[in-house]
Length: 106
Image 1: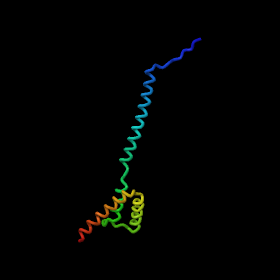
Image 2: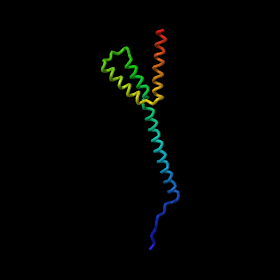
Image 3: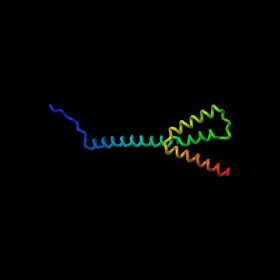
Image 4: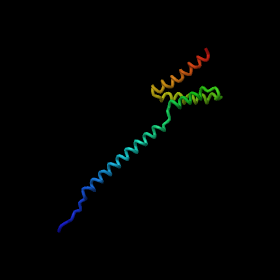
């Protein structure tokens, strides 16, 4: 009694390996694309701190003391979460504004 075993042709094994590699590469490219998209869409924390500071020091808006306190606390919390480089950037912006105010005054 002979049992027949079916062997896969050599070229079929080769195509399965290529197909598996292609899937891995496609998955890696998809993960990379999602990561890049998330980074691009993430808001800049320095910009949001600038907006809060502008809102807090704005002369146009009449904010109640409670609103000012709330905005100030949000601003302090955001500044606390910034990196040292981002803090320097935010500080330099404020220094430029103050220098312009001084130039206008004197």
